[in-house]
Image (cartoon, rainbow, N blue to C red; front, side):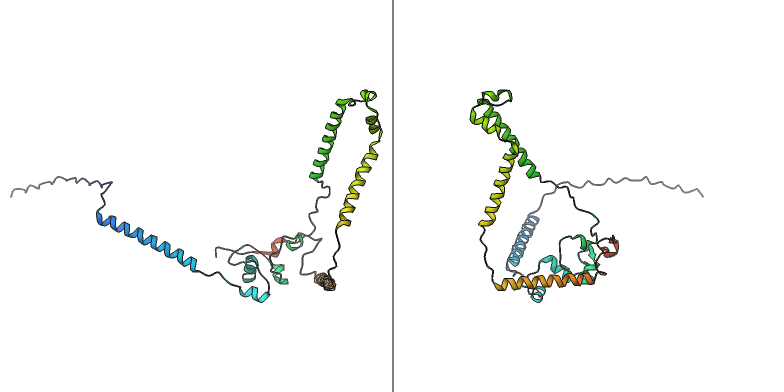
Length: 247
C-alpha cells in the first residue's frame, strides 16, 4: 500500500473592511431627526406652561402655630432639629433648653465664654485721618499766609499788626475754643430734638419687658448647670454632634 499523500492547505488571510467615516443620511433619517426636534420643543414649551400654572405656597403650619412669620432657616431647624437632611453641627445645649431659633454666633452659646478678651487699645482710623487732614490744611494755609509777609520766625518783624496779634494768641486757648465750639454744637443738637410722650401703654409695655428680662436672667442664674461656664473652658466636642452623611 502506498502511503496516502496529505495535502497541506495554505492559510487564507481576509482583510477587514474599513468603516466609512461619513455617510449620507437618507430622507427618512432626516425627517425622523426633525420630528424628534419638534417633539422636544413641544415638551419644553409644555414644561414652561406647567411651571407658570403652579401656584405659590401659602402659609405653613409652623407659621400658623407660632402666629408670626418664620424664615426658611428657622423652619428647617424646627422640622429637622438634628440636621439629618442638611448635616452639620448640632448644639445639644440649645436642644435641651428648646431654643431652636437661628441666632447670631454668641460666645456663650458656643461655649467659648470669656476666654478671648476684646482689644482694648482700639483707635478710630477715621478720626486719625481727619486730624492729619486738618493739620496739613493748617500748614498749607499758614504757608500761603506767610507768602504775604509772615512765614518764618525771622520774618515776624515784617508782619502786619493784625497777623502779629493773631500769632500772639497761645495754642492752648485756640484748642479750648475749638473744643467749646464742639461741645456747644453737641448740646444744641441734643436740645433741638423734641421729646414726644408715648403714652401710658408704652410705659407699661416697657415695664413688662424689663420684668420679663429680670425673670429670665434669674431663671438662667438658677439653672447654670445646663449652660456653659463663663470662666471654666468647656469641651466643644461634647456639646456638638457631627452626623455622618454617607450613611
